[in-house]
Amino acid sequence: MAVSLPNGSIVAIASGYGSPVAISAISNANPGVATAAAHGFTDGDIVEVVSGWSRLTDKIVRVDDSATGTFDLEGIDTTLTSIYPAGGGVGTAREITGWTQLAQITGSTSSGGEQQFLTYQFLEADAEKRIPTFKSAAGIEFTVADDPTLPGFVLAKAANDDRVARAVRITLPNGGLLFYNAYISLSTIPSLTVNQLMTNQVTLSLLAEPVRYAA
Image (spheres, rainbow, N blue to C red):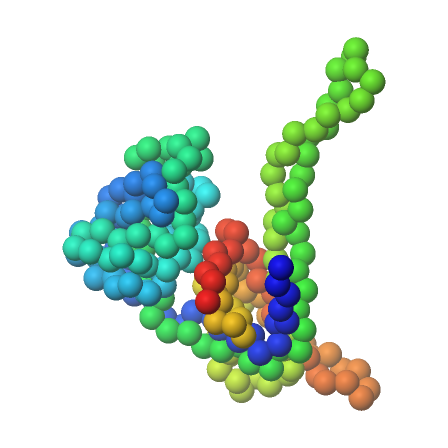
């Protein structure tokens, strides 16, 4: 059993991307192995994956075991063919080439992601049953101290304006990593409460479940 505090975590937004590299196949394996001619990725690179597999597409993944023409999608188990049909993983990957810290975060909350259910009952039964269906849309909201000159604030505003999804990396104090892909919204109107910091809200609308790597 282990517990931890988030104190000291660093949040960063992707500030640069390489060109998309075509993926011609992804194996049904743990981890999935992507086939991509002359991909140029090296172990430890972080890439955004776009795939025909809905459970994989838009995820931010770390490259491992890179070789000529192939690389592993570290931590991504694609063995279950009912979710990852054979031959259906074709898509692209592009490297994230830069990160900019979103500084002066004073708090965060998460919302959504709750499991939804179909509830039913047979005429002859005296109790309902339920089947899990989908999870509600999920998001994270950061409260940041107001300073429109900070690079992270400027990048968040650009993401708010152009509505292009960005990768977000959270580096935990123990060195663990969390990767999200999200649309970013920014409230440019600061809070004005006596004797409290002026703050803004930065909201992430998640495109996929996060990918997590241990330290």
